Amino acid sequence: MSEKIFIGVAWPYANGSLHLGQIAGANLPADIFARYHRLKGNDVLMVSGSDQHGTPTTIKAEQEGKTPQEIADYYQREFLECWEKLGISFDLYTTTGTENHTEVAQDIALRLLEKGYLYKNTVSQAYCPQCQRFLPDRYIEGTCPHCNSVNARGDQCEACGKMLDAPELIEARCRLCGTPPKYKDSEQFFFKLPAFRDRILDWVKTKTSWRANVLNFTTRYLEDGLIDRAFTRDIDWGVSMPVEGYENKRIYVWFEAVIGYLSASKQWAKEIAGDAEKWRPFWEDGVKSYYFIGKDNIVFHTIIWPAMLMGYEGLALPYNVPANEFLTIEGNKISTSRNWAVWLPDYLERYDPDPLRYILSINMPETSDTDFSWREFVRRNNDELVAAYGNLVNRVLTFVYRNFDGKVPEHGELDEADKYLMNNIDSSLEKAGEYISKCNFKQAITSTMAAAREVNRYLDEKSPWKVIKEDRQAAAGSLYVALYAISCLKTAFYPFLPFSSQKVHEYLGFDGKVEEHGWESHPPEPGQKLREPKPLFTKLDESIIQEETSRIGT
Ligand SMILES: [Zn+2]
Ligand SMILES: [Zn+2]
Image (cartoon, rainbow, N blue to C red; front, side, top):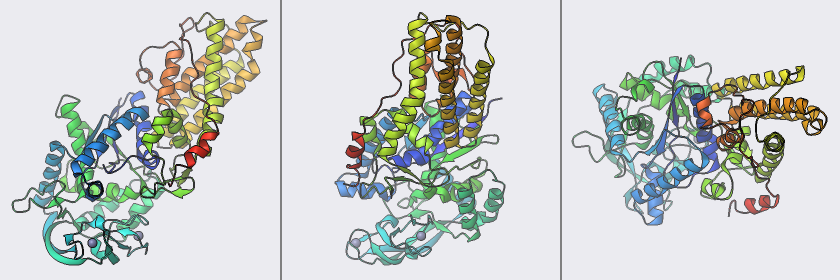
C-alpha cells in the first residue's frame, strides 16, 4: 500500500545566492528522501519556495538601490536554475509573493483570530532618532539575554537559536548607524503561544524517533516556558493583516513563511495536479509530513508551526523534523557577509552536480557539524567516485561491450561466490532503504559505497579479463554477476547520484527513467543490448584545491 509523504523544505530568503550550507542542511537530504520514496512507489509531495518578505530582502534592496520585488524576482530565477542543475526535484518551488499565498496566510490569521488565539496589544516599537525611521527587528542588533552573544539580531540569536523580541536585547543598537533605538507605542496582534505549550509538550514526548538534537532543543524550549509573540509588524513589505483598520500591519515573516508549506501545497494542487482539492491527502490524517531544515530553524517547525496548526485545527502536524547541524567551510563557520562560503551557482558553473551531492551526503551534518574542504572534495571525488564506483562501472561495461557483441552475456551455472555477491548486493539495497527511511543518509551512502567496493574485490578474484582467454563461459558468468550488481548499485545510489544513475541505467540498455523501476534489484536480461559506455565521473586535478580555496573569504 502506498504511503502519503509530504516533504517541506526550508524556505531560503530571496536576498542572496544559495550556498553549500543550505544544500547540506535542507535541500539535499529532502531530495534524497523524496527520490527514495518515489522509487518505493509512495505518493510524494515536495514543496518549498523563496521567502520574499521580511527585512532580509528590504535590507538587500536598500543596499543595491532596487525594489524588494526586483531583488526577490532575481533570486527566484537563480534558485530555480540551481535546483534544475543540482537535481533538487521539487514538485513545486514557489515564492511567498503569490496571491495564493496571501489568501492562505490571511485565512490562517483570521481563523486564529476567530478562535481567540490572536489579540491586540500596544507595544513599544523601536525607532532610530538618527536615521529617523522605525526599525524592524533585523535592523536592531545587541547582546542576547540568553547566551550573551554580542551580535544577536532583534528577531533571533544565531548563537543559541532562541527567538527574540528586539526590546529584550541588551545594549541594542541600530544596525544602520549604531545609535541606540528609542521606543514608540504601536498596536499589534499577538499570538497566544503559551496556550499550546502543554499540548505541544505531550505531542513532542511521543516523538521518540526524532533526532536527539531536535528533541532536546524543543523540550528545553518548552520547559523554559513560552511567551506571547507579536504576530504583526509595522512594515510595508509583506502580507497584510486582513482586519479592517489594520491593513497596514503585516503578518510577521516568521509566522508567514511557515504557512508557505500549506499555500505551496494548494498552489501545486491547482496549477500542477489539476485538481484544487489534491493537496488534502497531504495535510490530513494518515500523511507523514517531514520538514527538512537547518538547526537554526527548529523552533519554528517544532513549536510555532505546530501551534498554528493546532490553533487552526484539521491539518496534520509534522511527523518528523530531521534538522541538520551546520556545515562549516574549510574549518570556519559560514558567513555570507564575509564571503566565507562556497556559492552554489559558482560550483555548478564549474563542476558536475553528482560529486557535490556525493560529498555532502557522505559528510552530511546529521548529528554534529561537519566540514567541507576542497581538498576533501577532490580526494573523495578521485578516490571514491572515480576509483571505486566509476571505474567498476566503466571497466565492466566497456569490457562486456567490446567482448560480448554489445550485449549482456548469458551466464551458465552460478557458483557460491556469485550467489554470495548477488545476495549481498540485494541486501545492501534493502539496508540502504532502511537507513534512508530513517533519515540516516550518511549511513545509507556509506554502506552503498562499501557494497561497490565489494564488487571490485569479487572481480579482482574472478578476473574475467584474464579468464576469458581460457574459459569464455566462466568469464561471461562473473561479468553477468557484475552487471547484476551494477544495476542494483545504480538504484541504491539513485537518490544521491541521480544523474550518474540515469546514465548507468541507459548504458545497461534500459529505457525510461530509473525511477520507473522501483526500489528493488533490477537485473538486466541476458542478451539485452547495451549502449556504449562513457566514464561516469571526471578525475579532478589537485591544482583546483588552491584555486578554489583562494576564492573563499575575499
Ligand atoms: Zn543567544
Ligand atoms: Zn540608525
